Image 1 (cartoon, one colour):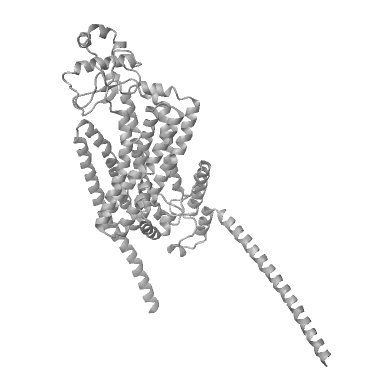
Image 2: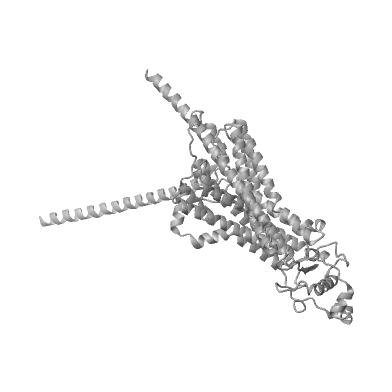
Length: 575
């Protein structure tokens, strides 16, 4: 009996061990199947990610538009494009993007966008912004957030004014570089570039460098009496024109020392100027000497660095465009004076500053000694100034300010963040135009500039003509293509846009006029420009109030009429 019991127990233990082995094998099989399924899911995820990255967003959007029925087109819907945010550059095109286009126009636009996209890829910029989010994190975006939220009126005014001051300080830096090169301060007759002398006039607070063609020829007898006849005859070796001989400062006695000054100035020009005496006309010496150092390697270096130099320009234009779109999304057709000030500052940053920077870079390159080191450092210097607002944002904005900017950006609708896709290419075009102006000006400068004063005059054209061309082109574009119910509304909005651009242009010239007024003690022109700026500001304000009062009411009536029509139809159906 006991033996049977032992056999039964042994059999049960063997069965249990066999069952455990089977269960372990079953679990191992399941684990292998689960691991295989996970590997397949990872491979599928990677394949989907690659497919999403290779999706042609333009074809997908056109396909969705074609598949929509007319009834579906009445209700706007947001298309999420594979997690990529398209950054617009113009708020006017948001309305155009919401209107369905004819099939033929869609096909032409698709072909045009495809070629623009190809050109952008060849240039290394693409047709879509590389920016993932709309929050630029700059002082401009913080000012936009304050004006859009309308948290505190005093705070909005203060933020808008400070932002405009920062932008004008940036303009002031570039203007100071330009004015310093064309009218360089000096303390002695020979403290100037080649072919120039230190000119001291009665109406100037301090002396500045001028071309030797303006020097006055003195009387030899007078100079002989001042320096003695022996010294004046050997003046090329015996007389020096440095600050030890005659120091030109505010204490300079213009009446008693004027004859001595004329003798030294003429002697300096006769010794150093490349043009023949006594006229000293024909060339600007320092430009001619510097351009003679520009050989093929120097030109290659300049062209290459000018292309790299366009990167901060394009980034600045892009950030300004994004901030203006976010601002328009919140305060469009509303009376918000701080927002109008921010609009003006953003227009200066987008349309004016890039060309001031171009002129400053030309000045730094041509007035400095031409070498590889100086060319590289000058390009880097201008690029660093472009980062001024970003640097100030890092210094003064904390995480709470960034959260405020994130909240404002989240409220931007899908149409505003996906409009003007093809127009993004023109932000890069504007940057490349600056590089083209820089290289072209340096290439042909000797054919146009014969005196150093002409150098400053031609240089002013580089920051006056391009913005005016942009303003005129934008005005005609808004009048011809802008999506508006009536021609009157088109013209009104285009005119307000033009006046805002002109206001930005006139304000941007105030720093240079202020520098001139400080040097030459003349404030009449500054006052005239200030009055013009006030008039333009009032015109923009009045026109915006007129548009808001008239066309916003018309839009409300157009919205109210379909609602009443649908209410009537529903009543008839009930009856």
